[in-house]
Image (tube, rainbow, N blue to C red):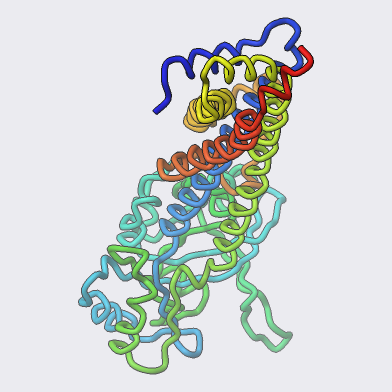
Amino acid sequence: MISAFERLVAFRYLRARRQEGFISVVAWFSLIGIMLGVATLIIVMSVMNGFRTELLSRILGINGHIEVTGGNGVLPGYDAFAKKIAALDGVVSVAPMIEGQVMATANGYAAGALVRGMRAQDFLGRKLLSKSIKQGSLEKYDSGDGIVVGTRFARRFGLQIGDKVKLISPQGTSTPFGTVPRTKTFPVAATFEVGMSEYDASFVFMPLAMAQIFFRYEGTVSKLELMLDDADRAESFIPELARTLGPGFRIGDWQQKNASFFTALKVERNVMFLILTLIILVAAFNIISSQVMLVQDKGKGIAILRTMGATRGMILRIFFITGASVGVIGTVLGAVLGIAFALNIEAIRQVIEKLTGSNVFSAEIYFLSQLPAEVSEGEVVLVVLMALLLSFLASIYPAWKAARLDPVEVLRYE
């Protein structure tokens, strides 16, 4: 146990006098370094967690957990297969869908787009989509008289509700003069915004019956999308689904489709953790240097304490407290600063953009329209424990060196 005398002496040593100013400056730099290291690590980990959660929720909100496609790219008799799949335990919904690339033109502007043909009830069944309608309504979409485009798509083409956009399919019609691309003009019934720039800028939703005519999928679809009650069991659900459907189908889950994307996020997150840990490690080395200088400066005081009856263990604990206190205070302040910053990071971003007049978080680059952050209690505890451990380890050597001082050698020529 640490006695009141040991705490008193340790805290007196922490309050440096004028002649010990340099030691105090080094100790303050150590404290600030640990504080910034802990805060930065918590902020970066929170932002990476927020990115993964937000991207995952939007990807799974737009796309199905499992895709079933035919062997030749078309899926006839899809209603019968959909009923058979819907009867399986854990399946929430099955949506027949047609997906195709097109060239969209309007108001003298042209760009590529991805068309998804799906029924109105399936569109409304995706909560992310049904809650993301910004303008217009789904009445014309339900009746097959309009399409739904993203807000960024509408802004790029200068479209309003009721305006028309021409879609050109590369799968053209064969004529005696060659293949002629299929073109058709569609009115805009509504716009949506899910907060992910890729979807808001390039996705076009079309009624399934209209898409079957436009892409020439008469009585067929290109795939079935399944939504499960738990997205994490998609991989384990595939064997049961394959047995139910039989041969001749290609089945893939969302993890396979987005494996490279989420693997890149995971690798980046781990690398950032290792790099930012070095900040705390450097601050811990500063603790060692400041404590070693403190031991050298307090050599006479240590010798006098030893002659008055202080044991080696008491000296060791005194200097361990002085070094560990810097680490504990820096870690606590860093944790508070990091959590507070992470919880208000979007508001801070908006303030910075207003002050600087620049866009520091472009949705076209970072996929999302808002800067996300999700503070994980487990990760905060891990960072705090790691910082405390490094601080305690950095305090051991100077404390051991102080305890090993021989009072006879120190006071011999005094």
